[in-house]
Structure formats: structure tokens, C-alpha cells
Length: 102
Image (tube, rainbow, N blue to C red):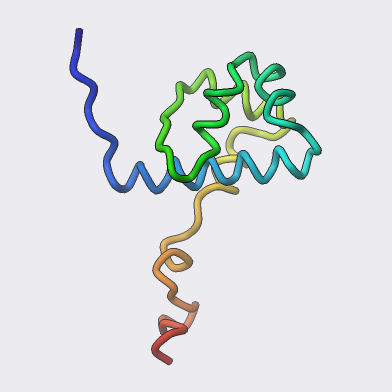
């Protein structure tokens, strides 16, 4: 059996952002985790792990597409909703200055 490689820090942050976006959109749609999991053909515990920001859970593309379809959102839009620009993460305004150090 092949050894599973650890998730890189960059991808760890991306997976956390994706889980938060999925959770937020699920709540906006008025769905419980159970409802979304059933509609996306996955277990509720797997969905819970994906949504939890303190647990880093990767997912297959099939699972990702199933979640997007179940949320009635284009997969590309879900990715875009989940990915904050570096300027937001680093706290840099459009003028290049940090809001903490004007």
C-alpha cells in the first residue's frame, strides 16, 4: 500500500476555505448536513469533516462535483467562492498598504 503524502500548507489553507464555503452555501440553501450528504451521495461524517475548519479532509473530484451539484452551483463558482485572493489573506489593501500599518 502506498504511503499517503501529507497535505501541503498551501493546500491545507485551500481545503479549509473550501470547507467553509461549502458549509456557508449549505446553510444559505437551508440544508442540513444530512440533507446535503444524501443529495451528494456521501456520508454525513465525511461532509462534516470537509466542512470542519479544524480538520483537513481532502476529497475526490467526484465528491466535489457531487457537492456542487447538490448545492445547485457550478463547480467553478464554488471554487471561486472558496478562494480568497492573497491580498485578502495577507491583509493588503488595493493601494498595497496593510490596514494594520497605514
